[in-house]
Length: 311
Image (cartoon, rainbow, N blue to C red):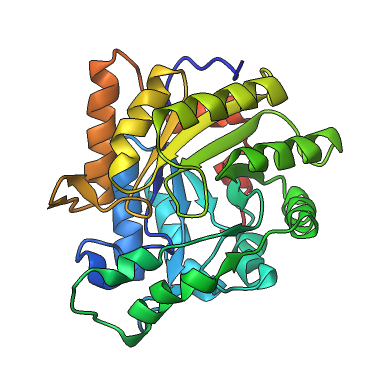
């Protein structure tokens, strides 16, 4: 069984590489917006902030450390939340490009996709909308011929590189095969418990959002990792709240945020990441579940602490 938790850890993914500026005026794109929304999410109850950056010129995803450096120190100085820097970056980046910011800033956590996969967000290009930037529609449409690459060699490289800094990982598992990939690295001693397993549902190319799939993923992880792991649940799009609610009911932690979902309800855009954190926090409260503080999250996940980063 997953490691027992007394309180639910809320992760919040602030901006990401899936949604583009034309999809919502509330998606944080500037460095100021990313900083403000991250701090707001922490104040609402998020213990972990999953962070991407966007190019100040046209707000496409970027891995440039100079951009990260404009918001990471502000976030650290303004809240106690754990900073989690992506190594997924933006679609089409090389492994080294995706790793640049994490290597420079040596955060407490970074994300790590646990395998290569078809990553299809091209259906979102079909919606009738006015595109603010030329790159957006082509970026989405091009994913019908796109493979997100993370080979076993890539994963080992990221594990060893970031492991030297004492950085731990949000292991992003988009299907059951990714759990077995993680078990392979555990068997080799390249990862150490407690494993923070982020189970992800609803990305075209990965496992679907049916509740049975969540139960199956949890059962598989229980068999592979026993009490050496901590489970978290992420549902993409309109499945965000239903699946995170089910996950919490099964004893898992939760991830919300505008990277994964833009809406509070049908036809109602979330105006901030804090809106989504407040929504899941209310649901957890109605289930008589308490929310973990950043200090409690650090203890559960055995993190090195906010004073041991390079920003």
